[in-house]
Image (cartoon, rainbow, N blue to C red; front, side, top):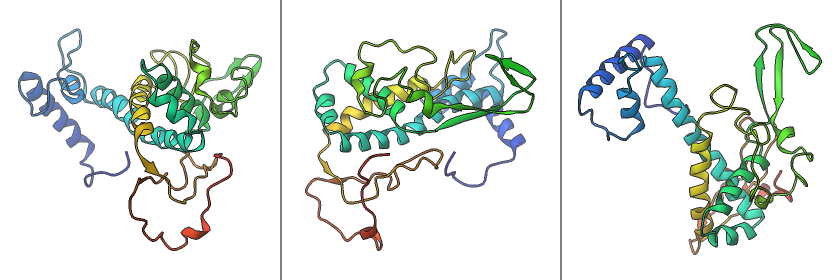
Length: 258
C-alpha cells in the first residue's frame, strides 16, 4: 500500500494485535461501526465457531482495500476520457437508470492500460492448447491485447461505452482485473467493488464545473500501473489562474490519449 502511518510493527506483533482486537471486537463494541468491513472481518466465525485466522482476515480486508485504491486510477482515466470525448459527459448526466454509467465504467477499464499484462510462474510441466509450458516458466497474459482484440471488440481503439449496453460480458471477455470465476480462477474478487465505485463516481465527475489547465495528458505504455502523466489536474471553473511550475511550458497535451 502506498504511504503508511509509520514503520510497520513486527509481523508477530501485528498478528497478536489483530487476534486480541478481533476477540475483543467479537465480544462487543470495538470502536467501529458494526457494518464496517473491519468489524465484519473481525467478528466473522467459521463453521466450527472459531474467529478467522489473522492471515485470512487480512486477505479479506485487502480484497476490499485493493479495488478501492485501484478506483483512484480508474477515476483519473474517466476524467481523461471525459476530456477527450465530452459527449460522454452529456450522456452520463442524462443517464437516469445507471445503464450508461455501468457501460462507461466497463469501457474505461477496457480502453485504458491499467496493467498491460499479468504474469505468473508455471508450478509444473503442462501443455495448454498444444503449447508446452515447463515448470517455473514465466507466463504472461496479454491483458491489453485481449481488451483490444477486434474479434471481441469491434473498432477496439475507439472509446465507446455503448458497446456494453445490452451486452452480456463473458468470464473471459473483459479481463482488466483477471478472467474466469473469482472463486476458482485468477480474477480479483473485489472487481464488483471497483466497478460499483466507478459507476457511482463517473456521473458525479461529469456534472462538475471545471476547466483543464495545460498539462501532460499522455499515458505511457511502459509504466505499471499506467497513469496519466500529469495525474490529470482539474481547476474549478472561474478559479484564478496561477503561475504554472517551472518547465510547464514544455508540457503539451498529446494529440491522442494513448
